[in-house]
Length: 418
Image (cartoon, rainbow, N blue to C red; front, side):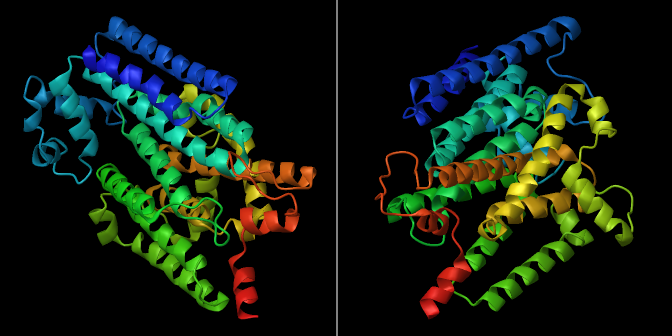
């Protein structure tokens, strides 16, 4: 019970510490969202135990019961017995042993491992979301940042659903939120960086990203591979190479991803499941399906009715997010766009229609919408307004704002060559 109480307290305290510079109303809203999540999590857990006598939802289509039964092997054992080899063994020799390791560790330190894993995923989700909210505040202002937190915390019901279910998808999303926040901090705009960081802090941030990527690789290896690729592509776009050279490198890197993930060897290495064979002629249809899924008539919606609300909101959000993407396309040529396209391709074409494996793209969509709303606000104001404590001289005009908030690397290159 001590572990359960500790995780509950951390889920409440850590986000407030990270967002301590926000005003009282914003923190009250954030705290109410977290409290509602925790209260509903406790209610559903004890209701499930009381009705079925089992702490997880048994579903033959998913791995929830397998995770629980396999890791129960560690019950009553000392924590130091939870080694990497032991976790891999319980995972059937899989490289994706991370969730088994975490759940096995909880079996050794608490009598409520199912409740503890739910609280742990909830705590990590809101802590990672708080870190990302700080970045959104820096870029778009407090109001829009809190709005992004509220959307992800209230309307992103799959996050709650997979935190409640004994599945690793909620943990993957939580780790990605940390990675996204760090990369958005240490991968600056292409010029006139407004938020300087010391070399030590940048090195520490990169080290943290590497640790998080390793942890994520034990859950879903191909996601880490895609993140590494898109960071390289981001560096290419931001480089001092000529325009043609950058385009050529991006095309080459994109083709590498396409052909690599079509290789049976790569799929076996990354332990990616692929359904029945689908001819290449269906690829355009599958790509569109990857962007739009889950469709209203799909199996995922019928089997998970609690997510119908979010999917309805997603279908409304997606067109506006795509509009904001193409509205500022030359400014959105960064790792967000590259990752969204690659994850959509891999999930929609290579793996098949698996919306829960595309959960990490939702904060990217929200970020695009927030960026466009911030840009509209700045345009209406006729002058730049930066979040936080950054002060900008009033003589700066909208052209300066557009060059710095939405930088154009090709324009910078032409200016430098001129």
